[in-house]
Image 1 (cartoon, helix red, strand yellow):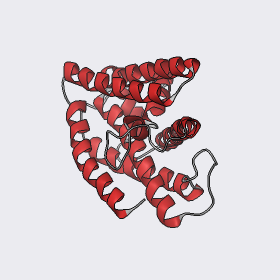
Image 2 (cartoon, one colour):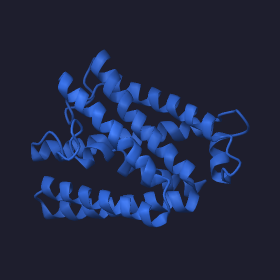
Image 3 (cartoon, one colour):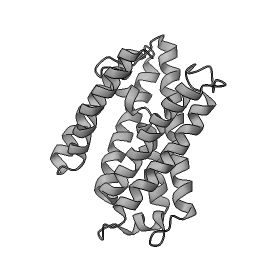
Image 4 (tube, helix red, strand yellow):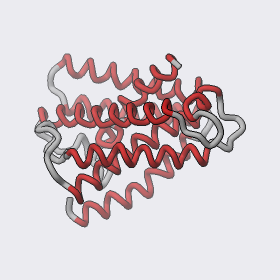
Length: 223
């Protein structure tokens, strides 16, 4: 990636991240509005990317399910848990990008030529570190629910369940990235859109999240 593209990526991130955080902490109507906008934008990119009717339908149904479960995670469980998933996905992506860019090494798969083993491992490492820091900050919140406490364990002690959860969600996020990359490769396009300078489209940025949310919801229900 050229320096100009990296600069665009950083600048747009400085704008996007505060907007996302703002809507996550808003009341239900504004949060729903935010999810609907993302859902419609994602659907538009998916439909433009795929020509086969079956893939169009499957993709729209998956996106609807993912966004609905994302809403359910925040409303049924807690904002803390919702943010934990977002943090894991974001730092999986960041770790994968920077470790892959600077360490390089063997390619992970032909589906996405830019993905490397170093990037995959780096994504896991960064997601774990970020999740631990996040937990240490949030844990002082007395309103943390029982599900959250089960994940983080006793006071100032991160148990094995927590680490397994973070690793699983990080891996699911990376698999989601590869799935969207597969469909981009079929469509012979680099990005799903151009709405986010330096990033591409909405699906380019939430490809891991739309798979991590359903997986997390399933795990929380089991717990």
